[in-house]
Length: 129
Image (cartoon, rainbow, N blue to C red; front, side):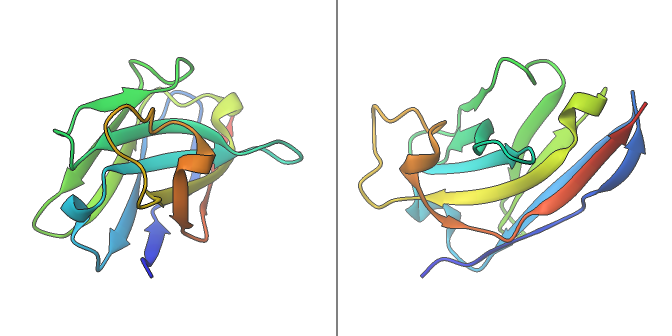
């Protein structure tokens, strides 16, 4: 069982920045993909960003956040982070951290929710105009 706990959400005005974090006791390099997803009320969960840790660490992003968000990990703290800049009201959502299924490997997109098995409880991000 992999436990992940998100933190750092909150309220910010449009154009502002927030960093959300995901803490885990898991050795992050034992899993191929770690990702950030978000969910709008009444909508399916969608990918925001992911990082291929076991596969080399290259990040991937949803088109809607490219150039504004950055995913990274703090190796010393075993923490996954999402730096969000130039936030827009359309970014208002519950943000979730996730760790992948054991079968995920080279060739996986790391941006599909069904590639992930372990999810945190989420942290709310609200952007006002």
